[in-house]
Every structure is written in C-alpha cells, then in structure tokens.
Image (cartoon, rainbow, N blue to C red; front, top):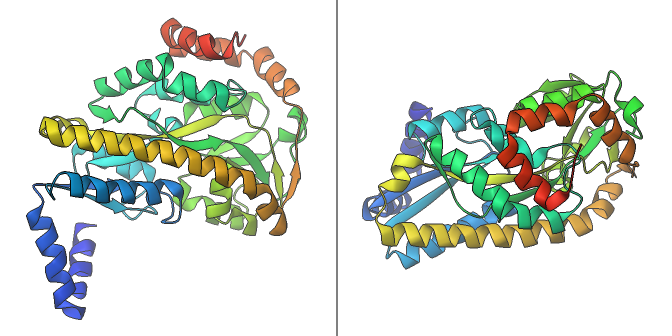
Length: 337
C-alpha cells in the first residue's frame, strides 16, 4: 500500500510539478499531519462534514494541524483500518459500534436488537450515561473516541428474493452483516443465515447472489447503490448504529492542549451537523429509492422482539455487557427482557 501511494504521488508530480509542490509544502508546513480513513463514499455526509471540519481546524490552528481525509476504503477494509489506527499507521478512523465491538465488545450495545424506539431515546443515551460508559472502555483499548458519535441510522433489511414481514421470513435467509458477534447472534436467533462481509465487498456479494440481502440505513442503501442489486426494503428498524470517531491514543495524547481542544470541538461540531444531514436525507430517501424500483414494507416489530426474548438473546447479552452498561441502556429505553 505504501508503495502504491508513493507511485501515485510520483505520477502526480510528473503530471503537475506545481500541484505536487503545493501538496509537499502543505504537509511540511503542518506540525501535525493526521490521516483519517473511512469506508463511505465522498458524497456521504460524514465525509462532507469532516472535510469542512478539517478546513476549520487548519485555519484555527494557523496551519499547525492538517487532517487528511481518505474516503471510500482508500486505506483498506474496516479490519485493515482498525488495525492501522491501533498501530498508529493512521491516526483517525470512524468505526461503527458493531465493527468496533470486535475489539471493544461493549460498543455493540447501541445496536442491541430492537432496543431503541427512536432518536428521542438514541441521542440522550449516546450523549449521556451510556456514551460515557462506552467511551471509557474505548480509552482502555488504547484508542480515544471523540465525544459526539456520528449518525449511521436505524438499520433496515433489503433483499433480492422476498420482503421480510415476520420472523418466519428470515428462515434460511442469507444476509450480509458487518463483522460482529452481536449481529451474528441476533440474526441466528431470528432464524437467518448471517454472513460477515466487509462493507467494501458487500455490493459484489449481493450482485453475485453470495447473499440474498443485507441490512443498513437508507442513507447507505442509497449512497452504496444497493438499489441496483436489491428489490425489497423492509423497514425493520432492528438496530441503531453510529460511527465513533476514533484516534490513536498516543497520537491524541501527543497533541498540545490548544490543538487538541480545537480538533475535538470541530469534530464534535461535524458530528452534530452530520446528524442533521442524515435526518434530512432519511426524510427524502424512501421516495428516491422507490423511484429506483425498490418496494417498501413496514413489518410489525413485536413478533421479532418476542422471538429474540424467547431465544434467550436479551439474557445472553445482558450477561455479556454487564450490569453497568445494561442499566445505563435501560435507563433510557426501559426494560428489555
């Protein structure tokens, strides 16, 4: 990968020496050059808002801090980038709670099946006691999480074969999910056949029918163009997930206090702007996706909750997450089992 990037820069310099001189000058002028990797397209609200934050940070630190954004999996898969941010090969990475749970298991608690009813429960919990518990565990892992989590959204199920109308619809259904013990556990309890595949490979897996469907928020279904390879959208709202903005712990601690304050403030602002963007986007996406040929249905979620409860799903994850995190969650959403 390093060799590839070096060749790319050499080609850029040969094609435009002036442009390369600007790039080199900018990097040399910055006291701190941090790379931020993520797996979503340039057009996704997260990237738009973080690039705006990067410009503000550069201005407010008088050019001392340069945040370079590498979108769309340019620095590797989720698994690659999580390893890279831990080692310090990159300094920032946005991981969903589900993906991060492979390293910090408690981060999956926000995605507990059918836990949150709506955003009126999500934001108070994630900006409050539940978020505090999760961030403390992330810190122990050697990473630092910026306070405000970016929105991914409530996840819906898409399929090429049939709509999901009740738990029986999941029987034998091959569904792509992110690498996550919680996701595997939940979909198995519902009778499906979950397959863990990195996001960068999801479209191809759907196109070639390695899997029958996948689950993601409408915003990602749209930006990833899953409508090209899926027909049905079932509005299950089965999980809520968000992107933690993670920084390598040593890199974060190595920043001067004044620079760190600016970076934290502007990335928190970016997260809040991203939340508003996703809310506005979701309001228009059903119509847009229907125009692309997708067929929507809204199943009753009560039978899914009952199936999970009867399968021992909630009891299992109460034990795994522990009383402190479980009680923090239930203080916002009420009893789950």
